[in-house]
Length: 509
Ligand code: MV4
Image (cartoon, rainbow, N blue to C red; front, side):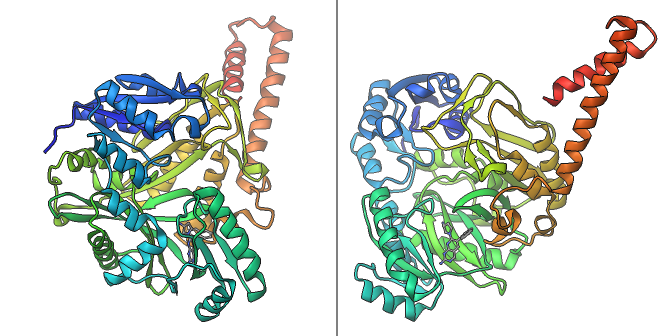
């Protein structure tokens, strides 16, 4: 057992702050690292110590493993937490951390290798009896072989990069004619993104749900699952909304999927937090997709329904202690939803929105959690991911959680840049979402042919009309009040209204 005294967090943004907070609660000192663009960031201000690691581009700062390990050693840290993204799933980096005599707060590098490569993961879990999406367990280097594989699997097929992530190198192929060019472009995208062009092929399943199981394993042979997250609401393979539990999963299915996820983790000698992704069809058949060997963006929804703190559990596991709980002690309670708030304009094809945040108000109140990295005066730059914050709500029921999310989204104000908050409000108001009718086609159906949020949305027209009417009324009222009383409170009650309305006008901006 190694007691953790000081942890360096090799990340930025909300997840760096999230880990700093866990350190503070565990009585562990925290060390932040930052690029030149992040000098005034919240994670830097919140950590006990902070050190620069390079210029804004992540390749010259947050991806500089050597510099980060050097900083950890110089600061006297005894462990590194990678957050998600950047170096989190880099087995070679994890090995270097260990070789430097530091504790790696993540899975063993071998397990990361075994499960991080999707083709290897498919083979590994299949050997453990896990059902996988119909496909071919061979790398597709030869186009003739690929055509044969696709014909055997049946169209439509989905080409995937073995080193994949974020949808890079993924191509849907609907007919044999499209295969050759899709193979070439997938291969070159995989090579440029991952430095490895290995691709493989699966049957492309449609009308299914994306459901993932959170697992947690310690060094004492305890492997547990913490239930599922429904993640079908994605755009361009990026998740937008996640919830726990899934309306499509009952106790029996949860137990079966959980057991399979645990078997996959055991087969790889996994420890720490991880996620096993599945597709779930309407007949309740489920198929293994891939394993994410890290703490995920959406981990808070699992925390809200289990009452556990996954980062604190990661600390326990990394220090060699057994987990605090056994499978039969994991209890799910209520419902949690997460909306990823991003600097993207939903009325303009989700174009990135850059600039300075000139004003901001975050929601609060019962059942609301905001894991955010933004602040007034902060800047959204081209250098990093557009995700600004995660808005997470918990309520006893799903219906209440949806109402709570709508309320919280309306409280959220970000001035200076565009955000996707209107998209989230639209989804919370959609009948399909409210009924839990979710599948991988949800976002496409919701946005329609244009791929954009439609301003014609009835509730929005009503909102805009109401706001315009209020502004016009306020302006008229002030003009007439100014004419009759010179803008002073004349004591006839009219003046008070002027100030109230002008205050409201200010708040509407
Ligand atoms: C699939 C799939 C259908 N068939 N694989 C998306 C992200 C990645 N982690 C896995 N993903 C998918 N893999 C096969 N063989 C459907 C998805 C998928 C999806 C696809 C298109 C549009 C939205 C989606 C949402 C979730 C998952």
